[in-house]
Length: 167
Image 1 (cartoon, rainbow, N blue to C red):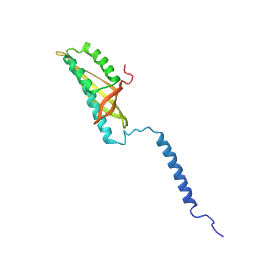
Image 2: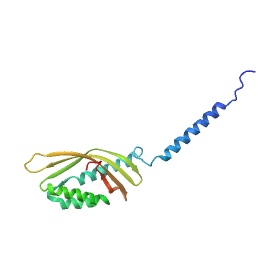
Image 3: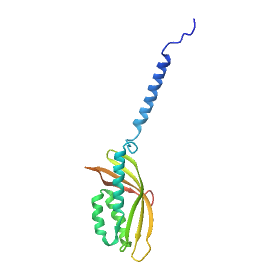
Image 4: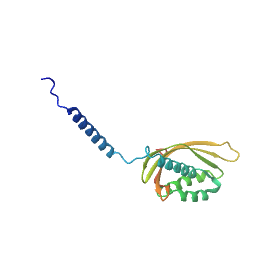
């Protein structure tokens, strides 16, 4: 009588195993947060560019014109960040009367992107100069949280500057 294998058993077994694998993978994907940072390149680039612009604007200022700095910041930030920034600027105001502080984001990356929020990690280098003195420089890293506004990533919100334990 020869070989009595049932035709198609291998195919049925393969289909069952494939369905099981898809079910497991689907369940795992359902548990993942809606982080689009690595798949939505256009939105990621927009959020990143906006975070860089906000960070450079907030941390570049002249000691001679702090009221203008406060007014510019009021257009960029909301929520708890307003209080946090006012405290930081108040501390700086005591020491930067004649200084010009320039900040440049050297590296950045979006660590979370969902439909209403983006968290951007920024590495910032600051240089400060007083008339007649050699310039000083230093750096820091922090996370800036952006929220979606009417026409894109408009404002930082909440406790938006996480200094990553640098305080």
